Length: 206
Image 1 (cartoon, rainbow, N blue to C red):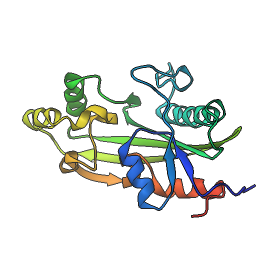
Image 2: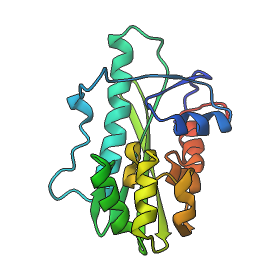
Image 3: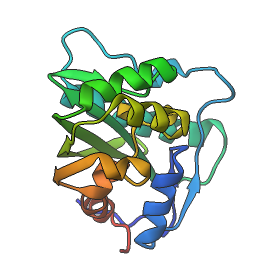
Image 4: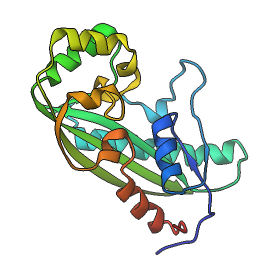
C-alpha cells in the first residue's frame, strides 16, 4: 500500500556525496545526525558479524540506521517524516572492506584492489514509524595495476580516509578505474534509481 508522505524527508547520513546526489534529483531533505563526537550508537553497530555475507551486512546496517532514525524523531520531538539511510561497503573475495583505520591501512587496501575486480554494495533503507523497506545496489569495479608511488600519493591526499574501500570514484581515484558494471551513483554512495523507486514506494512526490 502506498501512503503519501511529506514532500520533505530526513537523510540519516553525514556524507556530503549523498546530500549532493539527493539534491541532484530534486529531493528536499533535512539532515538527521545520530552521533556526537566519537560516541557510537549501539543500535546501529557497523561491526561485521561472524558468518555474515557482505550483502546481509550492508542491508542490516542500512535498515538499522533508518529504523533508529525513525525512533529518534519521537525522542527528539521532531516533525514526523520518512527517514532515508544508506550504507556502502566493498566485497573483496567475500570479505567486507570498510573505511581505512589509518594511512597504513588505506595503502594496504588499495594494494589489494590493484589490478583486480571487486564489488561495491550500497543498501538504502527508508523508515516511517514501524515500517522499514530497503533496496540493494551491487556494482563491479575493476582497478588497473597501481604503482606503490601512485598509492602513496593518493593516500597522502587524504581522500581515502573517510571512504569505504579507501577510495572515492568521484575524486582522484577515478583515474585508477578501468571498468565498472552497475550504478555509478551506487558506487558513490546512493544509487539514484533504487532511491527513486523506494521514495515512490513511500508515496514521495517525485
